[in-house]
Image (cartoon, rainbow, N blue to C red; front, side, top):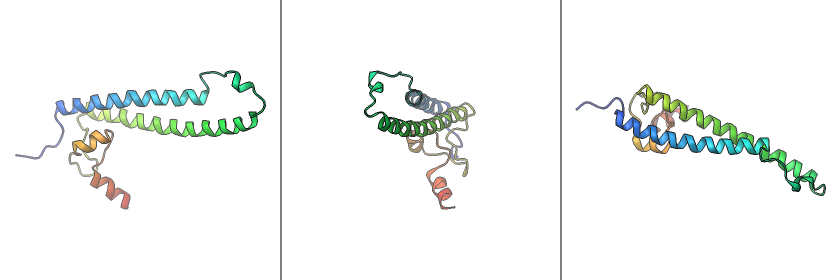
Length: 127
């Protein structure tokens, strides 16, 4: 029996469903982060107290910077998931871009946007 060179359509559909779930969750988290940056919820009466205004502004700036960084990371994750969906449509999903061998299902379930096998990823880090 020859070695598989790609996942079957049924297996790809299973991964597509997993990725779509993760994508929906990631998009919700991104929207939440974006709302916290833009203060979409609006200001309440707590924002009008002058006593701690200077401290709150400093903390608010820091938390907005952190939220901005988290939002950037989340958007990058979303893009990786969207690229994985394209690879599913092209039927190249799950094939290591370095070795050309199939990435184990366990890895793809844990990291559905993976493009390298664990071995290829580890050898990449050593370079």
